[in-house]
Image 1 (cartoon, rainbow, N blue to C red):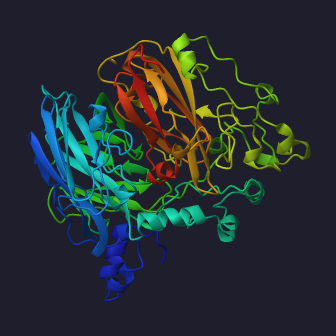
Image 2 (tube, rainbow, N blue to C red; image 1 turned 90 degrees about the vertical axis):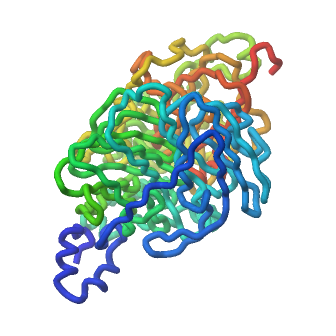
Image 3 (cartoon, one colour; image 1 turned 30 degrees about the horizontal axis):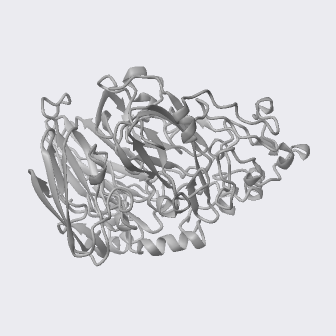
Length: 617
């Protein structure tokens, strides 16, 4: 019997005979029958004085107990409900036997309250209390999590909703907070060790001979070329459904967390990706999704059928379910190794058909930083060699003020392609007898064993829906679809531009910025208070990286002018680029990192320092 059998057919088959219970165990959790859903909204804490207690606990996922770290006894932690204009006082009690912390993701506050040990405060010692206190100057959907070790993976996270002072421009009749996450029976330390020893340890979706013969995988010649480059085109997610359970508000697919509605209501779903490592593709079959907010800030409503939500992003969505039937909320892992599942229903106990997992995506030449080149015939037919002459260096930096030159961070306004040694690429024989390491390293990238590849032809990918979503047959959100509802607060042109390369060695699970991991950096990236800077993120790896800047919002460069979408986290697609403008208006030291937990833990993090003008640098 095929595992692609849909849930409705499965229920019919299972009900037909006494073997149904035994048969059910053969199916993945999301496809198994559910008699009734869990209708349990997250606990809420609010007011001007809130206490949060961090402690070890167990949690039950799809009937199985698992070790966890929770807040106030729950995973996720309680929903913190605040009001724009209030002063929040949060007493955080650490009942762990190790240091802990809470970072208020996306909140604008004094840097001493940002919650990053070793950067903005010393951390919360075991069996002690730290009081966070700050004015609440914004509204929207946000979240909080540990910034200590790998605690976030164990359940140390929770949602934040800040209600606006005045009327909310988003009209709705009912709301549900939906926290997506991933959880494993393995300890996070064990997961990290396994990836260091064998980065492909969790990839159970490698190409097979049977898949090749069935025409489901790459043609043999193309697969051989990938093998020569020591690259695996199925390596989309470092950690996936082979060890993860994908959760909705702390519940597994069989638990079937359920959100109620009255037919015809405008229902607001505040969707938060609090995962450690999982990018989700979210859809509700049978319902159009109207995106009204991204990363806590309002956007002009845009209708889609699906959207990709990176780790640490939030999207607010309006749906208007009709009729007396249920709908399935699908949060499919981007490598299609599993899914989180929930139900929207007018009454408790209702379920809807759960769609099967779609075919897994394969990495392309574009994901390798080869632009739109074609690999057919064993040669890169689409390469424009004229713009990539051997030894060609990027253009000289534009002139900049002396204080910027002193800081050593003046660069061209746009990312320049790295020079390429074509002699190493085997063009003479019509093949690709080379490792991606053969590409010349960009000038600002430290050349070391931690830098496996440099993208020779990275392209702007903010107008793309994400890996595997290019041809799904319906509308998928892209960053270019987002338009800020309100005019941007600072519309000045950037004074300078800074290129930052996202670098790594996938074979050794080493991750860094510009070839240097966090522990190698002794000086922060300096900015002057009030200056306007364009940051060009260049992904030199074949993995997606959600990049988060603490203490600031930035404007994505998407051609939307003074209504550019403002975010605090941006997903940079493999082999792609993404640019944003930001105003360094928050004094202090701020973390800047990839929000893939194990990428950050391996070194993909820096400190950004915003200093008063006139201060020596």
